Length: 88
Image 1 (tube, rainbow, N blue to C red):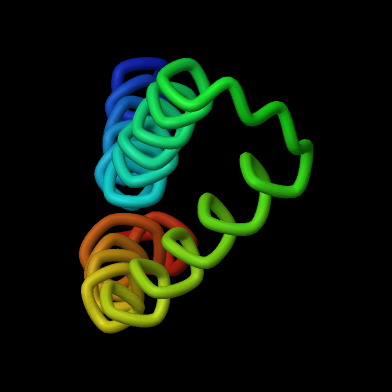
Image 2 (cartoon, rainbow, N blue to C red; image 1 turned 180 degrees about the horizontal axis):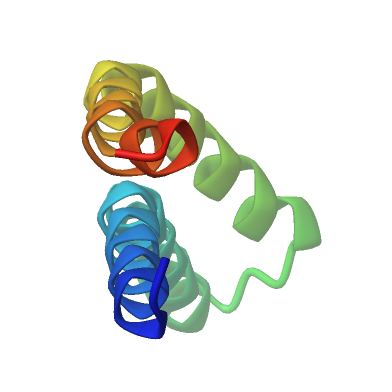
């Protein structure tokens, strides 16, 4: 195994990590900005108001995108890592 193969596999793994985490991070960003804007407009400074909606939205998106995450990881492993481990 050469350095090029290692770096290419690492690059693919990082890209898969970015693709898998993008939906959760985007929803957390949107929910955080929305709740922050609501708090700024209404002068409500409740700590649980920032936490609960963000976690709820992230759980809903995680539940909805779980099949995408699983299929992306499985395809990465079967196409890239398992042939490398098997020596192919």
